[in-house]
Amino acid sequence: MKNFVFCCLVSCLLLLGACGSDDEEASGIDGPDPLSFFVTSVGSGAAGGNYGGLAGADELCRSLAEAVGADSRLWRAYLSTRARDARDRIGVGPWYNADGVMIASDLDDLHAEGPFLGNPTEVLDENGEPVPVLEHDIVTGSLVDGTLAEGRTCSDWTSDSADEVAQVGHSDLATIPGVPSIWNSAHESASCTEEGLAERLGSGRIYCFAVR
Image (tube, one colour):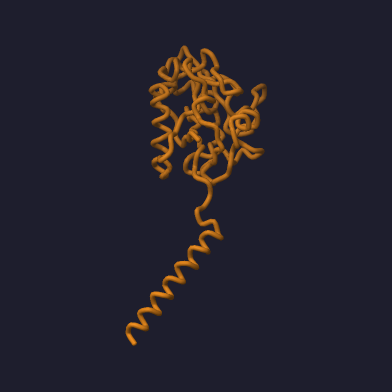
């Protein structure tokens, strides 16, 4: 009798496990697409435009991704230098924000439409929070097509000089009189100092992409 009861229990557990697997597969329990794009939740602070070069900027992206459990991918900062254009550093897409929403399907989509798909609220930091309006200048050193904005990279992201500038984009669709709202190339900063990046509504935040 005991053996019979034991066998029945085992059979029931196996059936429940099978049902659970079917339910998980049917409901898509794997969840949304993993994070592969974000704006940094922190700026550069007193370092201004000196991120320690591309290596330092990439490490900032990786460390913030690690804090939210998304560091298993290769993260790259969307920054151009004299050696390499930002668009050539980030893979081919697609990319998804912290809410699992696809912000661009490929490089052409990204540079034609920007990471908005018609909705600026999709541009989020790694925690899923939007960028404050007063910090919407995002450092890129790039032109609209993702190539180098010559002379606007804070010496390839190694300088916090008051005599240099950075090209920045807008993380939202808000407009400022006389300034185009372009996600990666709206205008230049006042300088590469902390104050210079803040003067025109920025804090030294950067875009981060997982290479796909």
